[in-house]
Length: 107
Image (cartoon, rainbow, N blue to C red):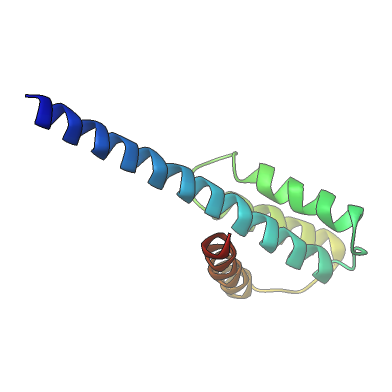
């Protein structure tokens, strides 16, 4: 039984590690996406852009999936007069996801 218990603990540890990595990747993706959106909105680099990126990261906690992040940025773009389609937003989110994975792989 000891071998089974050790295997179970190893699987649990691996699952935990994968979940933490997925969370970190999503948070980093949302930050990168938020920085891109801040640039599109004409926010200056620095504190304003970082602050906006934080609001995008926080928006992801509203509901499961990516729709809450897309909706937040789409609404902000509409309020700011930035014309971007949902397809373009999803493409930018996908690019941010690739960049986030690359950055986390390097760290």
